[in-house]
Amino acid sequence: MGGLWEEYNVEDVASPQAWQKDRELVLRFYNDRRKQLINAQPNPGHYGLVELENHFDVQIITQNVDDLHERAGSKKVLHVHGELKKARSTKDPELIYDIEGWELKTGDTCEKGSQLRPHIVWFGEPVPEMEHAIGLTREAEIFVIIGTSLVVYPAASLLDFVPSRVPVYLIDPNDVIIPFYRKIELIKEKASTGVQVLTKMLLEKYHFTNRK
Image (tube, rainbow, N blue to C red):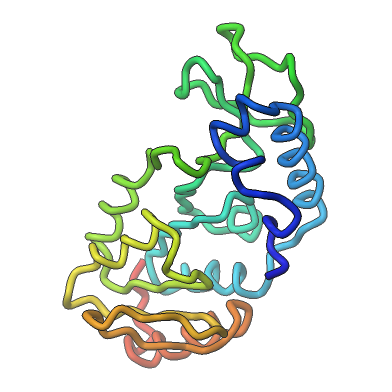
């Protein structure tokens, strides 16, 4: 409720079919998101994760396409659904460019002459960074889930790759259906306060040991 999709049908702005049907609408939708991002600021949850880097080796795997983690100061961020402030070639997906300002227009092309599109994983497209995310998950010694419903796949499947011995924490103010097969410690808070609670718990559990 109140999210990005309330004014739009997902199929109309965030799918390969939408790009073929109405490129201008898709470009306008993401241009509007970039304009919003210019004024957005990291919240205490973002900054709390940066503070955790003083004690732990923190790797963030995010479904968000904004750059708020980076702006807050997080050093290791993997975007599995792409990045709003980047564009990529429609001919060669390896050609990725930073967008200057907020606007991507028809006629903006890559070095091979093909139209640039938002560097976003649209519904129905493969998620290229999933293998990287799975690898990081398998190596985790602590796994924390923050503010996600655990229903958007394939990202939600990462929980299945967390080693059985590894403690899992979930920060979310809402009621989330937790898989019966996994023990998860729930912190029923918003990210802005929940990360503070998590930090206190971890520092007490690990006796303030610097793990960096």
